[in-house]
Picture 1 (cartoon, rainbow, N blue to C red):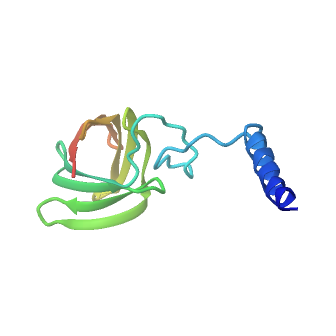
Picture 2 (picture 1 turned 180 degrees about the horizontal axis):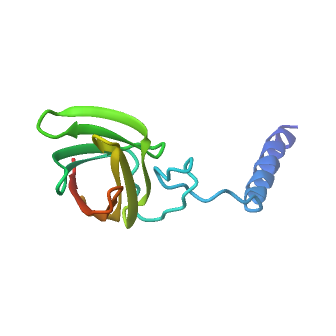
Length: 142
């Protein structure tokens, strides 16, 4: 009787293991895909990382955090150290290819979108502002 009691759970476990190979699991998501986490980045995740640097011709120092939900929190704005959190500030991608959009940077709702890499603790992004000018965001990981 003991043999039957041990055999039943063992058979059930073996069956479950055999079936797991048949189930298609969704691909891993990259942090902060800005689209609800459906990105499939395989390079280093930037989710939850904090950065300090500056945006040329706009502000320095500039600190920010890339949140898991795809939003960006501004943790330091200039020497005054102001902080703000706008749901319109978003990011997407991974360390090998990241895009960040920041809105409301100056009066008149000036914003910018920059793209580049964030590898080895250094972020180098470039892009265009809503005013048509080119900008560079450089930062190091905190």
